[in-house]
Image 1 (cartoon, rainbow, N blue to C red):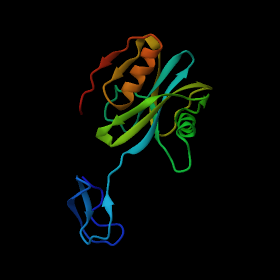
Image 2 (image 1 turned 90 degrees about the vertical axis):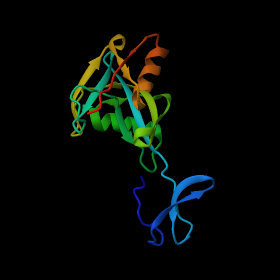
Image 3 (image 1 turned 120 degrees about the vertical axis):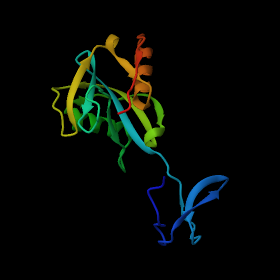
Image 4 (image 1 turned 135 degrees about the horizontal axis):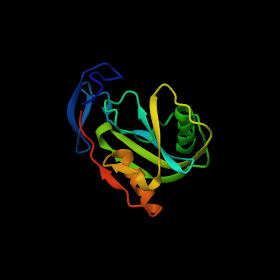
Length: 172
């Protein structure tokens, strides 16, 4: 569902129509505006700290038992590498070393493209206001989730010779 009801160019209502053989929302006054609903770029950090992977719990998540990777939105004017280092600093107060690209993953449920990195980090963890807990998880104890950033963690662990097992995510 489009976040827009009216055309941001001319204020006419948006309507469903086929544009370039694809269903889209477009301006009813034919001013040329088409809402493409492109995915949002997000970075994810597999933070390696003190010989383990750091997984964190976001205070906005409904499930108390789920811990995930550090993530953040790519901002205008920054590279994905700059963004992932910034997010690690903002959320964990750790100093990230040179990030290594793990891969790019679709996260369709949130209409995001995730650019995942391995980030070796040093310092003392201090959580920002977004997070309420974290865990240091030994590599051989990491499990992955079958969505978005979970696939990045799985691929990174497999590349290092580990055989991570999946966990089941429960809808709440």
